[in-house]
Length: 410
Image (cartoon, rainbow, N blue to C red; front, side):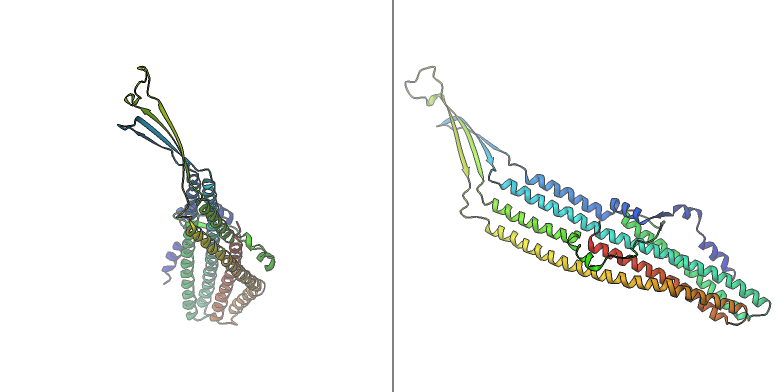
């Protein structure tokens, strides 16, 4: 079994290529790259371009139409030019509706960014926690290695049974295995973070810096008062305005569409009346007429009702979004409070107590006043307590990220 130690130690040491591939990033750097290259956000921005094009489409003016004809008993040649006249507000109402839709799509992008930002922050926290746990496991492995040397020396001089050497060696192997598992989790967490940053292989990403969470949070009522500024609620409110604009567009389409027809007829010479001078030419006949629809059978009432119903749905979604955001904010805030209290207790009391217990037990074992099992239990409890403290800090930062998501923090 001792022959396995060199191989395990070698596997724990990073290769030169791996060390060069590592990239340490702060949370601000992660968010900047995520906002620039997150795949879902790139798609959302592409939808913005489509919505902007729809505004131009809504303002497209109809083409005029022309007609050319001839006949045997009337004009030898006739031509007509029909010019659509969209002058009763239909075009303006259509443009306003398209602009309202574009505004909603822009807010869709903000909602997408809010969701992506939360996911990226959570991925960063997961990476930070994985690195912290890996460091704790490495410290445990180093302690176990030092303890093994101490035990072996005691066994060699006959002050400890040989069973202690076997037991501490087993614990050392277990600690090495924990390091391997924790290191692999760091790589997996880096890959997950890279997904949000638009990096195909983010296994080399490493967290640099502390997690974001205020020492003293604003009061919950003050945060609840800011909910109407969240991206999700503003998006639904924009959808209400878009539905109202669609209603006005449908009402404008009830107004008659008009067209101006201009024509000219060139009469055949044979159609001149008898007795006309020999050098007389056939006259040109000019025509003009105004055409318009008569809204008699279709006044678009069903279309208007449909858009009004869509507006009612949008208003219901506003209320639903407000309730959901309030519930999310309240739950995240209470979770933040609980995680804050837990972290303070662990850092201020539990971790120092575990450190003192581990140190005292190890000293007692050195003096022959404690069993090796007590030392191993104390060291394991110390590492578990440190990991728990890291998890509490990560839970605190994660809860604050949820608070920001509920508020729609940009």
